[in-house]
Image (tube, rainbow, N blue to C red; front, side, top):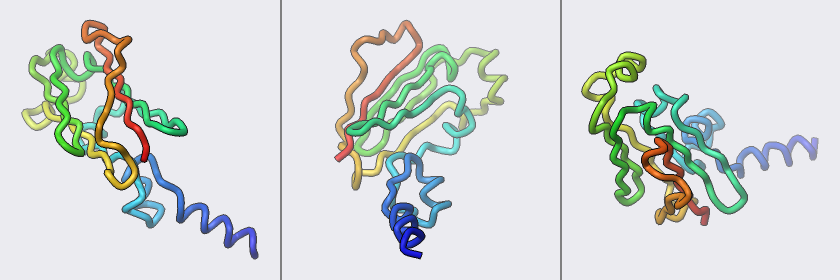
Length: 134
C-alpha cells in the first residue's frame, strides 16, 4: 500500500513535457510546453528532448516551408511561413491558418530567455532552441 501511495505522489509531482499529457494525468498546470494545434499537425517536423537543466527544441524548418521566421514574444515561440513550397503545403494540407505555428512556454517551470544553437545555420533548414529550466 505504501509503495502505491509513493507512486501516486511521483505521478502528481511530475512535470510533463507537454500540456496534453499533463491534462491527461489530471495535473493540467504541470507542464513545460504547450504546442499549438497547427504544430501538433506537423509533429514529424519538430521534436523536444528533455535534459536535466534544459529542453532542446529542434524544428525542421524546411518541412514547414521554404522561408520561416521565428520570433520570441514573452512566453511564446512563434513561427510564420513566409514562403511555402507547394509540395510541402499539399502534404500538410496547408490553408491560410496553417502558416502560423507556436509553442507556449510555461513560466512556472521555464526561463523565458531562450538560446539559439550557434552551430546550426539557417541554410541547413534546422533550428535548435535551448530553453532553461528554473
